[in-house]
Length: 171
Image 1 (cartoon, one colour):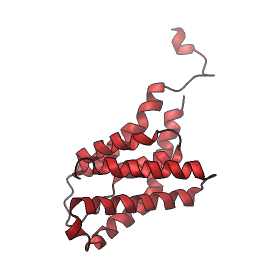
Image 2 (cartoon, one colour):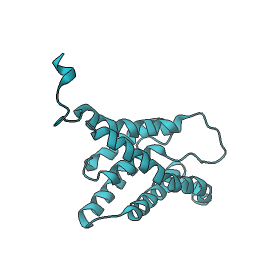
Image 3 (tube, helix red, strand yellow):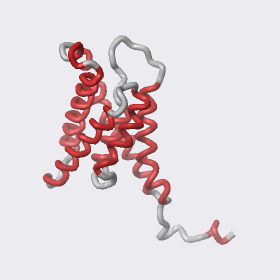
Image 4 (cartoon, rainbow, N blue to C red):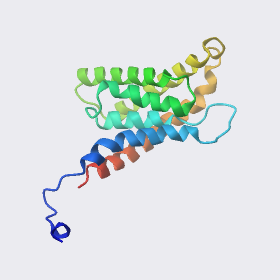
């Protein structure tokens, strides 16, 4: 009975929610690529990567540098890429972002969007080259719609993750 009437002041948010929600959202984003969508060319943006970048750029110190590796392995299970490719590429992105955070003073919205755009381009092109280097080297133009859709979708994903983050730390 007393629990129902306890004070609403000085309450702490749930530690489980604080620690689990970011990883679960990235995993759910990676699972979106497993939807049965059949196209001739890649069009579906890498939602796991977009959500990962949004979390990393909104909360720079939340994840350690090595966190890109296990989340990339989970993404590899759902995306159909060779196992370990997203783990390597996401780890490289985390190392680059950590280097930028250590050197930079601060960033604004446009710089975050530029960093995310360059990261998306890097991961998509390298992911395509990992599959078949020689035949895909001359066909990089088929990635243009996916790259553009991913870059244009990033602000929406960031807004969504910002709302999830507000819920995550709410009491």
